[in-house]
Image (cartoon, rainbow, N blue to C red; front, top):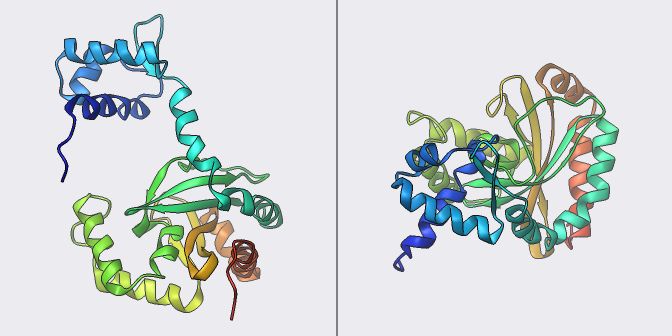
Length: 252
């Protein structure tokens, strides 16, 4: 492993603290948060202020500016999947009148790169740019269903080490769920990620069978389970097939 540059590591540690404080954070609290001396944190903050990545409020609290978002969003703008899928996920959301998510894999996580709201909006934690665990989201399980059992076990084990799931979680039970997803092409999140929220997800493929990402339909548990009786899963699969074909996947 290459040697880390301490000053860069500290700067990002400071930047990555801000999302936990949407209303801003003061110098003393931030220094405690990152485990550095106040004078050290103050120097970094002055540099980040000068570069335009943070701002300081009248109450002396600091917060992120949109410059960091602009840097990150440039990565999303270069994803063909984001543009190719837009019309179809808008159509799907309108048809089922529920939230539709589009994600890509990032290690043991998924990253939400698009979210289409429904006419009957619900409060949930998903936001564009936010990450969620592969192991307890429907979109994550859909992606995992395309991997070997050994690869799934590695991600499952790393998720336990990262405290994403309880240490006593059963892999046998989990892999049985993945096997069912392989059979049906549909993965389920039954209030595993958020109380009262149910999601169904499936994979999006690209050229030569590449796993491009996944999409899901999300809504209140009782409403979703009722809609699943009347073709919701087929609607999801149909949209995923359309997007996959647009991404270059050839169905046998």
